[in-house]
Length: 266
Image (cartoon, rainbow, N blue to C red; front, top):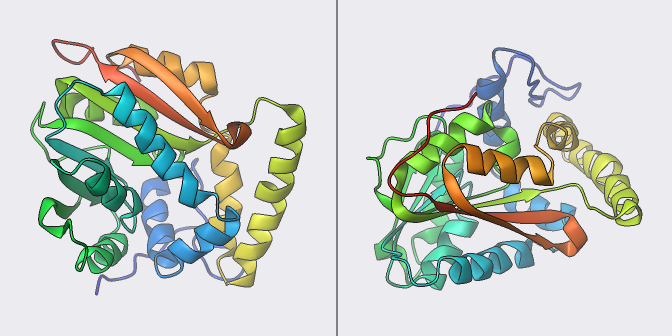
């Protein structure tokens, strides 16, 4: 089993509580995901009221159509967690090799365990890797994707630039994230649940820090139009978004511009 990394800041119950302003932020995010790895799946189902069963398949449906006509031989799922999106992608794209990568050892262990008996296991492999420094050759994937990862990254522009680097000239990036609903009414209901109920549930299972951090992390994610502009700046030429659940989550789809990545923007 992987050792448990310690966090610099913790909540009152001792659970990791990442703070983006601290130099230890990336390390503390790893400690947080190590802490919640065992309960990650069932807690997400509970906190999302089961909607997470719909979000990933719908995002892959949108990806399939956006990427239509282009090769789909190798797929990278970065920040794969326990392998939900990795496994779904292996089923959606039955000819592709799918690589699930995560920088948290405990998550990779759980992903491998849940996939071992899956019929698509021969086409799935897992690796330890950070979105900030991908250990893959440039142009080695036809599709790169992530689900609920972007708001946890120390530098989203640098991560997108790195993902653009590993994509082939005809490649596609999918980023699925929690987002601010455009409707004030839906937004009010969303924040009542996301900002209050979810942290309360987290505290009930001795994970106050991770689930207080969750609504805070949304504040650091670029707004809808800013995210589209950022994807253009780092080297994607065809960028669209597809909202789900009245804007509670959004799938951003970006087509790589040939012949290569643009200069890095910080």
